[in-house]
Length: 387
Image 1 (cartoon, rainbow, N blue to C red):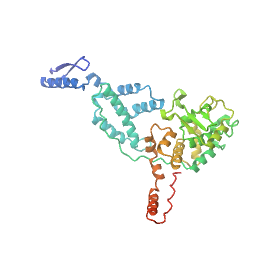
Image 2: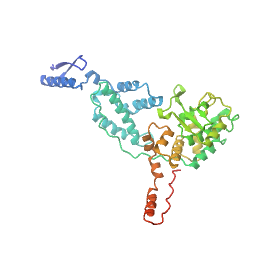
Image 3: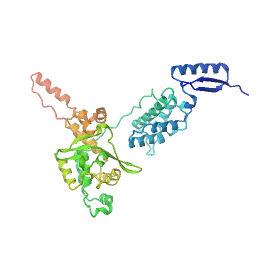
Image 4: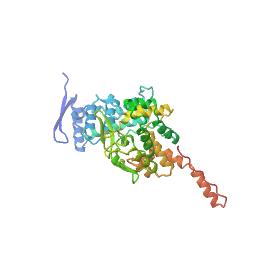
């Protein structure tokens, strides 16, 4: 019979903890000294806590954030269930830096159903969730250190946003107003009563010239419009959940904003909302909001395909951003109008469009030098527009 040596010591909360895996007395004494030092330094982890399974800790992390928006909860829950599945049955004491690094390598080499490798941004999103779970585990004393702390983000070329052109947006608006086969299918029996449902054309035009998100447009009510002042207020969004459509607060505090419409959009909305109640949804049917996913799939995408365009509804927001940047608006003003949580998001997303606007700096400098030297100054080129 093999002899085992047992150690007992008080953990940080004063509770007695025991461990009996040691085969020699010297190993047991060394372990006891090490554990006591860890307790004194505040680094001790209860072995039973370290034995907790990763999936249980990950679920606890999700449950610890009741303040998350529905979309954030679904996205993080999906990452835990799908992307982090290889770690589910591991004990927290097995989640080391080496384990995390190996997991990331496997993740980067996982071929998708479409036959391609995941983008760097996709890998980094998964690792961000893993980092947050491990940080939660550290605070709950399942881990002494966060094994993700020293891992740097995966570098990869991010795809530059290419917004649709003005002609493409105008073509989409015209297409939405036509009684095309896809619109007849989308309207179904209602087509006879509404052969030219102007909602879709107005929705696309307002999206392109206000930059509102799809959920913000779906949640827009007549009461949110001040058409005498030519503004609209973003006060809510509509999200599609398993239980159906429901209202939610805007994406961030800065997403709550008042947007100046301009003369043409104001006139368009005046005509569109004529006869509506203040409680009606602008792009819904009375008190029923627009189900955007259905609109995107049944109406918008077929219309774009018919025109030969690879454009999503969200690209209309990118179009609006490109118009603002080309008009000379600074990054803070663009960020405020788009409702970004921080102007750094705007700059990161549209930096190439700002660079395009400022690509004639050399010509401006040449003009100044010519004027300073007494030569005939040449007129600086106009900045190229991204649309």
